[in-house]
Amino acid sequence: MAQFLWSGKEELPDIVKEFTYSIEDDKNLFYYDILGGMAHTLTLYRGGIIDYDEAKSIIDGLYKLKDKNDINFSLYEDIHTAVEIELTALIGEPAKKLHTARSRNDQVSLDERLYLRDSLKEVLNLIRDLIKAFLDLAGVSLDIIVPGFTHLQPAQPVLISHHLLAYVEMLKRDFSRFYSLFPRLNECPLGSGALAGLDFPYDRFLVSEILRFDTPTNNSMDTVTDRDYLIEYIFNALLTSTHISRFGEEIVIWSNPLFGFVKISSGYTTGSSMMPQKRNPDVAELLRGSSGEFLGYLDLLLVTLKGLPLTYNRDLQMDKKVIFRASRSLHIILEITRGLLENMELDREKICKNLNDEFLLATDLADFLVNRGIPFRDSHHIVRDVVFYCQENKKTFSQLSEEEWRKFNEEFLNLPDDFFSFDKAINRRDTYGGTGRSCVEYQLLLNRKWLEETRRLIDALPEVYMEDLVNMIGK
Ligand code: ARG
Image (tube, rainbow, N blue to C red):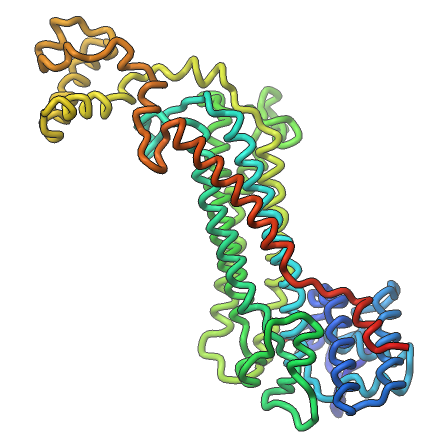
């Protein structure tokens, strides 16, 4: 027999139950619903709305309930119902006062915010760990030069460390987006009631403080209908996964034997059921595919909110299809990407052997003429003719004779002997943020500092311990 916090004339048909229940998803909120219930009880007691014995009994009962592992959640409409009815079974009469001055409308927002607060902290840690893995690899690969691409065509030589640090920049922005969501997420909905506020002496600042929120929310009607915090979380997840999907694609390309930049250890590849020689980069491919999931979630939430009148409407429950899956998927892709990085090896030998395309230095050649007084547009044309000539005659730049160079421009005779060294070309690009070795080393240094600073930022985020709330009621 299903149990509700409300009663109607008739029992709901099973299909209506299936359609309206959110319990399968929101049992993930069990811990947070209990935590919120404790803070709420403390506030009811401090306001003189319930007495000490009632408050003590509810809080101790909730604390016991958190470890009950034989609850048949499927009986209940949602997690709030489950907690209240299970508590009543445990402690009897006082449990009936738990829902005083509270609606499931402010309660669900509270539970979600508490859940996301923990998830967000975990995300910040995971992004930071991933950045560290990128930095570690970039730090030991400063000697590796690869062709940089535009349009996926060989363009100019770059340090592979520079390439890896590009992802660090994306991930630092992701970190900062998640971090800056924190103050908007960290507002306490309790005390908003169903929509209009409360007719009890309920101290919203106190409950906010107990749960270590920065402040209570400002408008009860907005509070029970607002899901912006979740939408922002999902957007941030989407953009992070979009960055990760780009990296996944790079690894797919880099691990193709025709490229051969990386070897992925067998723990992060899979075999083919038919072709025995193959190692497939499935992990990287799934990372590449991961962002679609978040785009779907974002879509679902925005469509749900669009045109929805104030205040709480049951449509809002659709967010349960998103919040837990999104959080879990985001945690996983961040962890897996780090695992992939730590389980792949850059193939120095192959990369060096294959770095033989002197046309990657065509821009350098044009710039050389510019430095000798020739306008860039002219030098571009001259070098283009040199390239065409080389291609027709199957030669590289350094195979041209003095006579051949002279035909294009006298200035070429002043080219230093080591001009076509890739290493020299890298170090010529020493503007801030460029691929010059000293620039990349400097960025590595800045990023290591960033790691230290963000450790402190994360550690300073609020944490609530259930035991502290239990102790607050006293003996
Ligand atoms: N399961 C509901 C949700 O997730 C909880 C809030 C229900 N509120 C209500 N008035 N029926 O949105």
